[in-house]
Every structure is written in structure tokens, then in C-alpha cells.
Amino acid sequence: MPLKPIVILALFALLSSATAQKSEPTSPAGAPAQAQAPQPAEIDAAIQAEAAKTAQATINWDKSSTPGTKAHLELIKKGLVSGKNVVDYRLKVEGAARDKRYKLFVWPVTVRSPIQMMDGLAVGTDGTVMCPADSKGTCTQRFKGTEVHLTYAPEIGEIFRQALISEDDQSRVFFSVVPSPITETNKTCSLEAIRLSPSFELALIRGKGFKPGEDLNVHTQSYQDVHNQPAKADAQGEFFLSITPAVKGRTNGIIEITAKSASCSPSISFNWGL
Image (cartoon, rainbow, N blue to C red; front, side, top):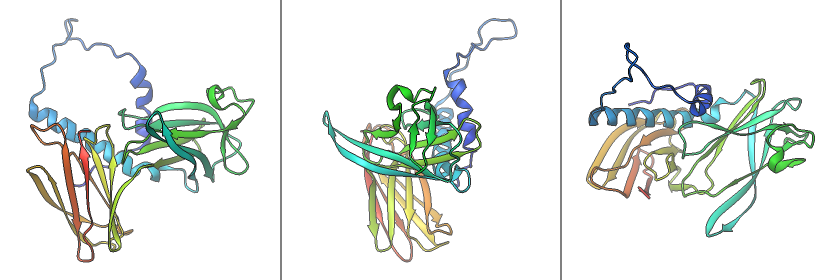
């Protein structure tokens, strides 16, 4: 069933409400309203709806930039820090106005909506994103007078979604990176499993290299939970599918996914619940 698109910028409207204190709903008489406990079916439907929104927002993320703008993440270094894999990137953009100051938003898989990371940024003559020495923004706490580095300690398959947005909202550059990808290839086709939640409770499967408009059958199995559903490659030979692999009575496991077409049949698997 196709996911319903949502407007990416609507996510940023949640930024203020995420930190604002919400008042307790009251009944007409002024007493606190007594909310009825949701039933299991209602909870499942709510979880699936939220998962669909998150998946579709991720699909649309990189497509939401101002036309003509693009981000490039240049790997500076990677290694182990306290036993964790750490990667460090330089951020460069093209097509973004250089006479504006910018805010950097991030959307980690650990939170439900994007949050502002820093402001007061600028774009240098070579496209490098930096914190000017005369900046009045929060970027001076770490990068005053230097270029901005984006440092991550990624889990396997974890996506990092970011957006550089000018203070007047006229120049926007959305971008994402999966530093430690999970990919498998068969012939010209490939599958990638993208982690959208901390323990892979929600995954986005991306297929590439199929024939444009090609019909597919996607087979998934997690323990005894088996599904087969049709899919279709788009004009670029790609498709997306969101998956919630958890199985009732299990706390973790392995899910296997195969996308079969007339031309290829890539398969992929990953651990969930870990």
C-alpha cells in the first residue's frame, strides 16, 4: 500500500512544539479530562501510521532542497574512539546563497522530528560551510572561525538526515548519509536496508538498478511472519518499502528480504531489536 506523502517543512513546525510545555486537556467543567486507554488495535494502527510518516519523510528528505542546490559530504577521517566507529565529514554545498546566514538542522533516528543543531553559519567561496569569526550564532561554541565538521558514531545501516536552511528560509539544502551501509547486489540490482529507529524496529528498504517501471515481488520473512507484496520500480529503476520487522513474542531476530523481478533478484537481511 503506497505511503501517503507529507510535506517536509511541516516537520520543522514541530520544533517549537517539541520543546514547549503542553497544557493538560480539561473537561467542560474544568476538571482534568480522563483519557480512555487505547486498545491494542488502535496502538498498532498509530504505530504503523507514524512509521509510514517517518519513512515517507525520509524518502522525500533529499528531494526537498531549493532547486539548484546540493550538498556534498567529504570524508575527512574515520576510526575507533572508545571502541565505537566514528566518521568525520566536511560539508560543502553548491548553489546556496553566500550572502546569508544559515541554521543546521539534524534529524537523528533517536527522535521523532528534526531539531536545530546550530546557527550563524555561512557558505564560503568554495562552498565549504563554516562559522565566521564574527558570527553571533551558536556555531561559535565549537567552530568559531573554522569550517564545520559533522562527526557521527554510526550503527550499521543508520541514516543521518540534515538540512542547512537560511535564516530567511529562502535557501534550503537537505541531505543525508549512511556511513555504514547494508547493501547486497544481484546482477545490476541492489537492495539497501536503512535504519530508521535505534534498534531497527523500523527500516526503509531501497531497491536500485531495476528496469524502469518493472514489476517486482517483495518477499519478507522474520521468524514465522512471512509476507509477499507487489512493488513497481519507478522511472529511475528504484523502489522504496518501509518495514516493521518485529514479531509478537520476540525481542530480536533477523529479517530477510528478497525483491524478485524478471531481470534480477537481490536479497538482504539484518538484525532487528539490537
